[in-house]
Image (cartoon, rainbow, N blue to C red; front, side, top):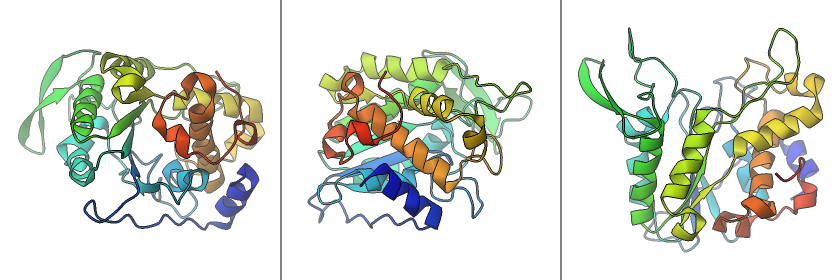
Length: 278
């Protein structure tokens, strides 16, 4: 499906993702999306915002793969782990399935003075923090540790894993109104986990979704991009979510990052997707 066709669907407000059969009965692989409100159904909790995961299936061959958008608004890598969502996905996996993990918007929440249950332990290694959340003492791990643990779990089920940093907030949302985007630690952490766990050869790929989105936003300019954020600087409109989804597809089909099996299911050509390869 062309990018213009997907945009038309987004502007109509119609989004439909097919139901996924149970693991025991289905024959085609499934791509599971694990993330926060920027990816989830109804992301932003309004009738005029949407998560990018709701548009990904338009760029994939539906006869060969299905999409299960398991993103949950308000979650971080930590809370998604604690609340059992990674476990739910693992229980549904079959060999040849694919899981995309993309967190970061809620992971920077502070643990003190009041822990709201989202923030990870600061650091890029095996650091741990002890906190109390909801009257329960909890050992909190780092962002890369949560990525690493989930990836190992999914790989043990025979799934391929795609790791991604968070999508950028509106890069024009500053006092000067100029484009500002700098990849943060989460980008470096996600890339390092993918490399440490064997990279594409080991069934773990890194896709710099954040940079690809930023590149498109820069190309489109402030006047266009500001309209993609009708609620705040984080949650996109349906049209904005379509662009963010297309940026993910762009990262898959570009030669340098086309190292995940997921790109084999893409039905858009590189030329039909906005942006450029990095």
